[in-house]
Image (tube, rainbow, N blue to C red; front, side, top):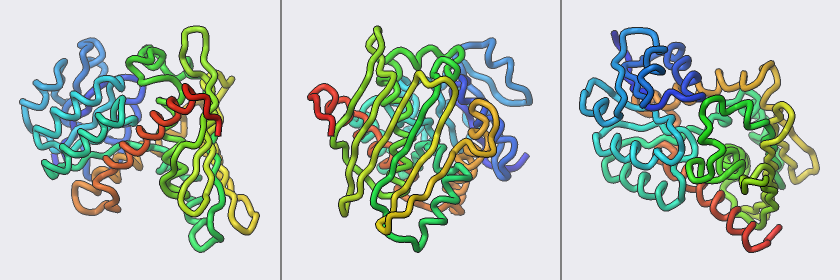
Length: 311
């Protein structure tokens, strides 16, 4: 069999989108899977290696790259081991729990000259790509607002770690914040947090948040997050200097909860493969630095909340 041999580490709720993409995207194939739960490993069909320890999978060889889709608190150790083994890494956002950890991984990837690719799946959404094309040659961007609403309990399934801040890194700000911020960064460039309004539940988990941001040239950003929304709403609106507003509904044409993710993860896998073969779009070292930037925004939002800075 030909194609890049990819190992998937972690078989939680997001892994199914990667596994499907590895079947559909030309030039790649699933070569091994790893999960601590041996019963879960048996659900993966086909002649692939199966491991309950990622270090054993790395030591076995026979891989050209790995996808890391484990709980957030395990990203640092597993990505570090894979990079030290000389393997390119595609890691589910967030890159790590803290910006310092993300910076460590980005530095290690640069030192070993191995791609580190943070997976921001909304970049590959069809409506977002159409919006990007519409902005080409349009008036300058004045502001961007991204809304990211869902009922988190419908998403997590058996992955209850999403609701444990010490494992997730926080709540909606830590989990949905990086994807929402990446849309702002994609459409208007890097931004800094000016203020944050955060609502927490009785257990201390942030369930709703509004982040106010600003970037070069006075461009403004706003991120609205909700983990208690009855259903799912994901969209972005761009206000231009001429007063016009362009919008993208990320869920348009994708009926059903999380259905848009199938084509978005195909985009992730295709670009990751292109990066490894030299056919990709390039960018900032395989988006390790972008992953660090998103972590800085998350940390800044929580700091603003504690300081009472609303922006």
